Amino acid sequence: MTLVAHGPAVARLAVYAGSFDPITYGHFDLIERASALFSDVIVAIGVHPTRKPLFTIEERLDMVARVSSHLPNVQVASFDSLLIDYCRAVNARVIVRGLRAATDFEYELQIAHANADLCPEIDTMFLPTRTKHGFVSASLVREIASHHGDVSRYAPPVVVEALKTKFKR
Image (cartoon, rainbow, N blue to C red; front, side, top):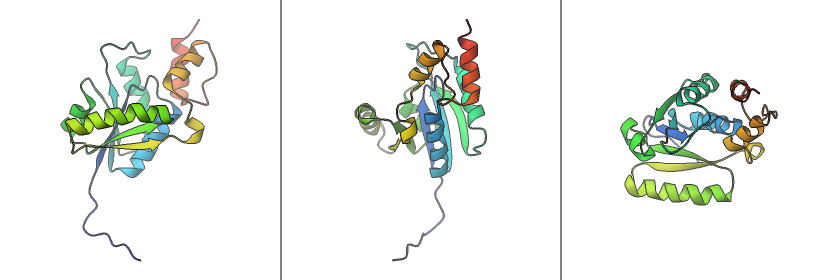
């Protein structure tokens, strides 16, 4: 059987959103994989008024931009609205979400259903994390770093240095 593509490829903008406080190798892996799947990707860093992040929005924007600078189809931005409203505003067609474990799936599926109810023309795509990153979370990285532990296997060098600065004795 031969498959034949008809017509030009359709450009697709995807949004990969999160707090990225800080960005980990798990996040980075998903950014790279999304950039290979979609014509354009926005890594959208959410600003939540009730959360107290370790890093400012400016610091997180800078770290994510530096880590993903080699990917020409990736942009980094922040948003302070519902993700679905942000996706509408930038004309994104897909939301990319990472899954580490079954517990992530239940939570993420609930959000995906709500987003589909609010805006059915935007789909959510789940990408499972690679096995080696399955247990890594930003909160784990922050916890280890706060006790001056080595997080270099979990986060890019720019993040490791930023964490050392944050947690100087």
